[in-house]
Length: 225
Image 1 (cartoon, rainbow, N blue to C red):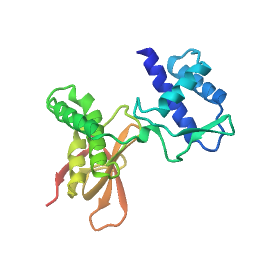
Image 2 (image 1 turned 90 degrees about the vertical axis):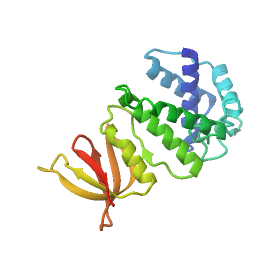
Image 3 (image 1 turned 60 degrees about the horizontal axis):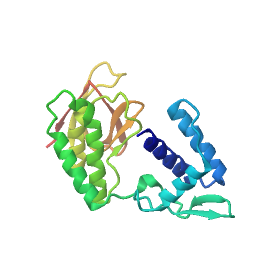
């Protein structure tokens, strides 16, 4: 399992390197970058051989992992992606992948009444968002930074569904600076996580400026007719 994790870390590191077209990447540069990434992960020096990186590149080029990465060699020593927009993180899901994810999301939602669901809802919401964006070829509704110490999770599904269905919400909200809460009528656009806090981004009714509202304990909502 550790070896598989190390291989995935190397793939992600090589992918990140080759996306940076402002630098020329030799095999030695990629070995160094992977060694540094593994050191950060393991907390110790991990030997990365030239053969390992060569096999990694071969694996990324193949369809065994679904990558089919367009890695080319130029100048007889430098590596790069032939397609500037390519990344292994941008690989589209197959129909079978989406069917499995859809079934998984529905299955996990059955456990929403259990206390452990609060630990799963962020993952489930991202899965549902991924399936939706792949099927409908639309931009993601949820924009994530990091999945640490999430707040306001109990509001996510209602807000997510409101964005999908283009519903207007009446929100009872109190910011950290306000002395008392107030009501806001909001057309929600996206959900975004930033600095371990959730925000809903939308437009206030009869106003053209976008509004960012922190989703936390002082946040309540209802559907505006």
